[in-house]
Amino acid sequence: MTVRRLTDDEITAYRQDGVAKLPRFVDGQQVSELLAALDRRMADLGPYGYDNLFVQDRCFALEDPVLRNYVLDPVMGENAARAMDSSSARFYFDHLFAFGPDTVVDDHYWHQDQPYWPVTGEHLVSFWLALTPCTPETAALKFVAGSHRAERFYRPTSFDGGPMQSDLGPLAELAVDARHQFVDEPPPPFHLDPEAGRLIEFGYEAGDAAMFHSKLVHSSGGNRSPDDRRVAYSIRYVGDDARMMLRQGVFQDPALLPEPDEGFEIGRPMVSRRWPVVHP
Image 1 (cartoon, rainbow, N blue to C red):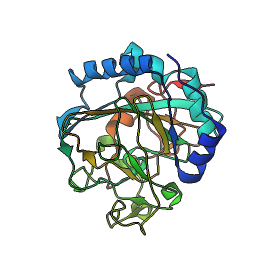
Image 2 (image 1 turned 30 degrees about the horizontal axis):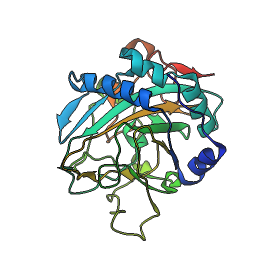
Image 3 (image 1 turned 90 degrees about the horizontal axis):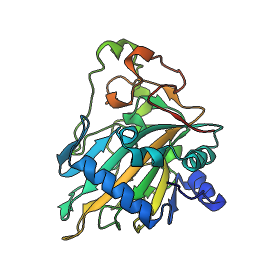
Image 4 (image 1 turned 180 degrees about the horizontal axis):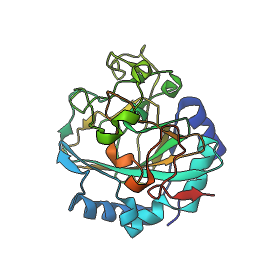
């Protein structure tokens, strides 16, 4: 399985706005193979999966040969490294999001990804692949251009807007006081307020993708189609300057930690058996 190489214009857009649309990123056969693999997963969700309003699961790509070939594709690794302006790229994790027909979300879940993850740095990029056609009315992602350059994060919340925390167990003593990293007010309703930030919306055919920065504010408004589902598959890569970090008082995804026998150290490079090198 192969993906196409990024164009210079796509990399320029990514670095300027924090996001770039990637038309025809994979072909029709690859869409079919990936969608079949994800359908198999949705029929047997893993320990981090759930089906509540929409289907979500993460950290399973390396278990499936089709998904593994996609995320470890050398061209994908080259794309990630070029976009991040990094000499290297490691596969970090994957994430499945599927909305059934008529799955309306009353409020937009505006957020940034990086504060949920036990990592810090600029070299973190996501490739969000549409495996079914979608528009902003059918759960396509929306982005606030340039928001990845903000100095602070919005505090992590759950999909219902409530606060999220995690029990770090014995790792709690390693976490840093990150209160200065966050603003306490919720993100503004960017979809309603044109003055709040420059909103970028795309429509996607199956096989189109969006590449975006882990600090970029983004959202989806739910699937308003009465007939069609929306299935998307997001994969994430880390580069040279990514470092391990645990933040006190907010959710830190336990699925994204290194293997227990590898230990954890604040500020350590992102090196683990769980995160294979894809480039070079």
